[in-house]
Image 1 (cartoon, rainbow, N blue to C red):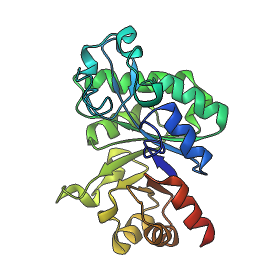
Image 2 (tube, rainbow, N blue to C red; image 1 turned 90 degrees about the horizontal axis):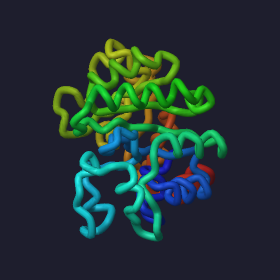
Image 3 (cartoon, one colour; image 1 turned 90 degrees about the vertical axis):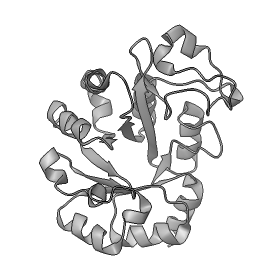
Length: 236
């Protein structure tokens, strides 16, 4: 059970407070998004701009912002945009699991892949608790080549008419598939399981749905309400 961007309904998404809330609610870890800021740091943020997470107070593109500028931006509750390095340290210290999605709308695509790989190579203790993922098959292939010891999953969504079933994910070097919930039919789950795929389904917020997926043998359920889903799975 992973918190989707942490416990995002209780604290600002993709921040350390949200991650703390998710694990306090019983989640094994969190799903998060990474991209680059203007200083080339790997930061944890879903959107390319700050507009949504600051509720319109700051609409700057983070790729234009230096590290010292971004570090001064306060989100709700004075939370800050963390770096991936900080989150890796948090995961190691608390024995938490991370599903790290690399965003594909970055300007420096190669730099993002290389810098994520460099961070994980520098922190061997973190590698054991990280799963990498991306919607971009080229990212998946590159990560699998650069970090063969770290599982990489191909993210797929319902609007992908051809790629939604993640055809040929093994040829990318992927260890598995992270499908959107509507793609996680019993038939597809059986097919992926027969291929020994790691499966993490997003975004699951209904207890009955979570129970069905658990019975189907998925490896991880990603939810906006980790506490409710943990409770549902614990009660059977």
